[in-house]
Image (cartoon, rainbow, N blue to C red):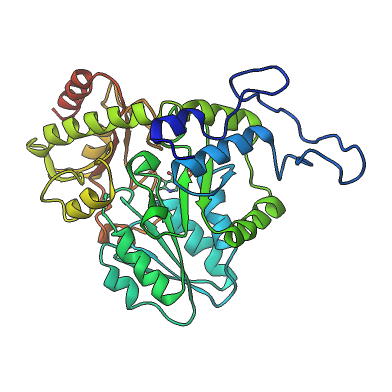
Length: 381
Ligand SMILES: Cc1ncc(COP(=O)(O)O)c(C=O)c1O
């Protein structure tokens, strides 16, 4: 479909219901489908593998990422796991040294046990990836911007490295959302999302997704999707389809509020360090400008001279922001990565990349900016 983003967000994959004319895709709350004779069906056999509500969502997700095939999963981690199942013992993966804690955990505590080796490098420098490639490398897995220190990786440059080496290249696009960044256009083979975040947008669904262009790769991923069964139900698929209809509007508001929060915090006396890719002195600013349409609604700060106890006190003193895991919903959230989202990463590993005890991650929501700034002022004060 050659339409622009907002049109795709509202219409892609969705058609008026042929039997009733219902404009919104129905919730096909069914596990199975009638067959006229064995094998004679309408394209749907059993809902672990295919369901019409989920199919509409998958087609919409594929369209938003300028891809051909979408697959929805019951969580972002189920999507990640499915990519890793393409690998065999002895295979190697090159990935970032600053990743969502759950991704680090599934790499080291699950798939290393199956004989897969992970190399954690600074993915802001494509050279660090190139020098790690060996005959055993099968996958490059990159998060950009990273969670939680918002480091940028140059997708186009890494895509070239991957192509030259004949290695699969996957991008976790959760922090950017398809509104801000489309990795397949820049040379990635697989784009992954925690749909739970910006795509769902209302903190009421846990879901993941993969989008690809290559038919053979899609078939291999679909095999594990269906064989292992980490697929979401129709209710959740409907809720996400509904959420996506305002993705472009929400993302514009997240970016606008994110900019104002970042600018407010930059010179705040309680803030020692701030991570937000929109600042010209952010090391990934030029890459962000090149590959993203705006800088997003995620901001992380290090509190000046704060102990763990001081940081906890600040984190618990917000009135509009909510202290909670997750991000990307319409409501503003505060997170303490060291003990919450990144608690599964050993201290010495996380501190090396800046996930220190006095780091706070802020998911800037779409409330009135005056209320958000006033809440920051009182909490930091
Ligand atoms: C960047 C990133 N990737 C993957 C995930 C995992 O997604 P889910 O929580 O939907 O399983 C998260 C969740 O926080 C995330 O922030």
